Image (cartoon, rainbow, N blue to C red; front, side):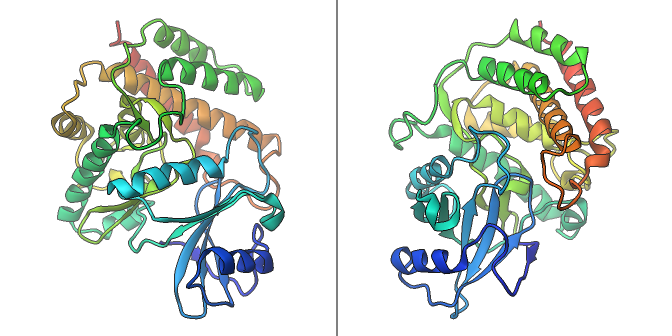
Length: 351
């Protein structure tokens, strides 16, 4: 793992004594005293590296200190997803235990193995990879995503992990409602795109496992360009797997892009596959038709624009807390505009 902030005392979000006692009961080989380091990543669930007196390491996940959405940050759902996929040979960290008793640490949490490797978060880290590694990593991301989508949800024990049908329709309703509920400035193009897409939703194919936020910086990767572990299962559910393809492509910047979904996007560095190459690779590996990919790409850009509008509005209203400025907030307006424009371009090809 990267971007670890060392600390001499337990950081906010960790009750060192209670969590150490829990480790004693559930992680038999842990040797106290335990040290806790917050991983600097995201504005959602909190992730900590836990180390013991022998230098062993684990990872602990818990909800944020200031929960904004009551239905989010379900630790049991995250734990259940990786617990179902790990025995199938899918690259996720091995789960070691789930604590649903909020009195232990102020909120539920779970613990999983620490997977060695790197998280490529920005263009600087991507540029340090050899060209051949960037291309190999592009291919590995597609192959791992196709593997996830190949699982029979009943056979792996996730049959009731979400509603099977109508995934995209529910997503359209959810994110439009979130934009409306945040009190963000009116954006007529958001409503227009919603209405255009809602009237043209493709028939959902085979129901599969949808990660919900599959992208390069949510994976731990090896030095030779292989995905070693997929992280952040907060949004995992069942539904239309092409939604995952669309979100991977929405986050995927290319060299020369006028606007990027992510600040300082890692894939804007030369050497990664293009979006068109990723589409062809997924179709090849999965055997699925991507003839309607423009619909999903329009939806993906629209969805991310809605998410950023909501985050921006909550931040400006003070709901994100006052400890530090939200990273990249000054670029949100341009990123939102770029995503809306991209959504409109793809939507114009959806009949």
